[in-house]
Length: 237
Image (cartoon, rainbow, N blue to C red):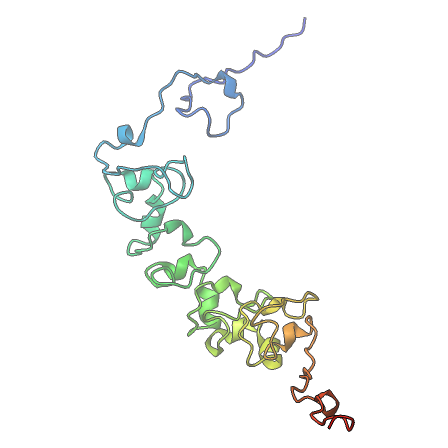
């Protein structure tokens, strides 16, 4: 006679999740479906967050959604430090005033005060290499520097920012007076027939647009043959 082990109950001694739709589980159908979900008002009765719907992610809750909103009333004791989202942020950066705490340490340097400051850990470490290479660069979108595309706008194409991290070196050499914001479309094989691309300063879109030929204006002076004769015929007396 073969004995089989009795299947282990998924309930056991562990408490079921209060939110059956979230979190890994071996068999979600075994979870009870009649448990009430607590609202932020019920979880944090002293929290003064009137509107806890995230304006960026419509329909999602702000508190406890995994994103630290580092501003009042969310990141306060009464609101559970944004439903727990800001606990680690507060421990790491107690003096950081960056409202969008989720941008700190997200892998992209946000070169703007208060993010790229000592209080915010130089954007959670994201701006350390940028600060070393370009200590006087004020370009906000630091991740665009050296990405292979010349950004000829803002403060990227400046000496302080290494001419967009070197991306604009050739452009500046070939078209020193060109004001096109997206130089990477110059000379791409398609004629952008509008200013400032199709101009002499931008090399007529880097050669993509035909170079205009000098126009030869017709003379407005009538030729001698076109003048009517005022001399009467000899037969007329």
